[in-house]
Length: 106
Image (cartoon, rainbow, N blue to C red; front, side):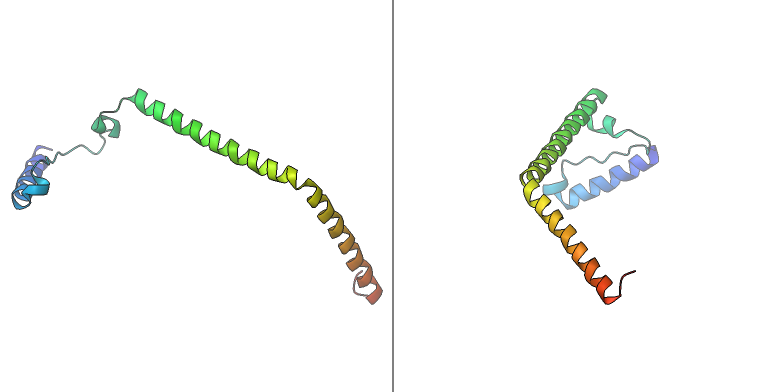
């Protein structure tokens, strides 16, 4: 780890010298592969739990909103749906009868 940090520090100094406007304040640091991202950013486990709870509640509210909108649209179209299903049943019966007359249906 120390060797990698020394090498990365050298690369960082060269880059800062080559691009002083954008890279002068950057300080490269080597982290172990198993280092937790929570430790890197300084966020506590409580903070992560709170964020997860907030996101979960937001998704729940959005899902409920969509469910209510779908239900409301279906309730408004109840008459149209019943007429369409009645017409479809009548149409299927008519096709079935005409097919029997022609000897196509069993």
